[in-house]
Amino acid sequence: MSRVLLIEDDRAVREGLQLALRRQGHTIHAAESGEEGLTRLRAEAPDIVVLDLMLPGIDGFEVCRRIRATGDVPIIMLTARSDDFDIVGGLEAGADDYVVKPVQPRVLDARIRAVLRRTGAERSEQEKHGKLVIDRAALVISKDGLQISLTPTELRLLLELSGTPGRVLSRQQLLEAVWEHDYLGDSRLVDACVQRLRSKIEDNPADPLYVQTVRGFGYRFGPV
Image (tube, rainbow, N blue to C red; front, top):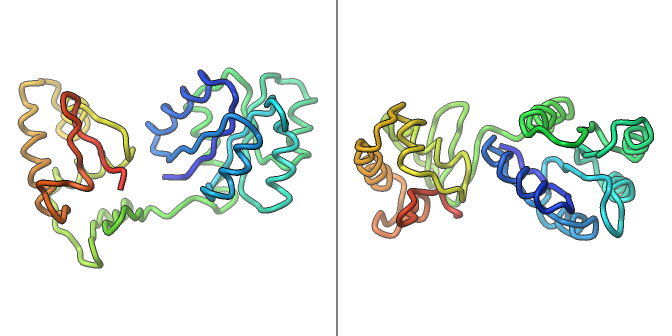
């Protein structure tokens, strides 16, 4: 999972990309102007910046130059035109790659991962959520330095929920992703597994910090 700073002034585009990239497993911080983007860059320390060139106020070219002047965080620029003027100008300002609008989320996701691989900036598969550490590569879960023993189903449930922190997943979605069932009557499988998982990872299962219930909708992981 990578931390992405998305700087885009078009609300519909910004919110659409936020949702799509979260579904792909990225953590997204968004800004609607160049000035806000530069402020959030300092506060969030993202792994990569996705930057629209046509911004009000400080345009994307200048934002790109300022980011590059202070660090080497990778930058993917979004351009509404496919001509050489925008592309060459953005690359000369310091961008690492570009995507032409309208943006296909899967294409952008692939470009993000490719840029991070090339720059050596891809984050570790080990994620820290408060006291809980999730190692997706080794499939090891630990808390306070002690490994937690989970059944395969409990582990899959935790990985599914923690893959998009803060996002609410319905019982139906969890059934399909974890159990590969599509019959809603089996939602009791989800509830029972959630209870078992909470008993193992929560300090107080009755007041969960990690696997939270959203009444009438389903479950979410965190925010911690």
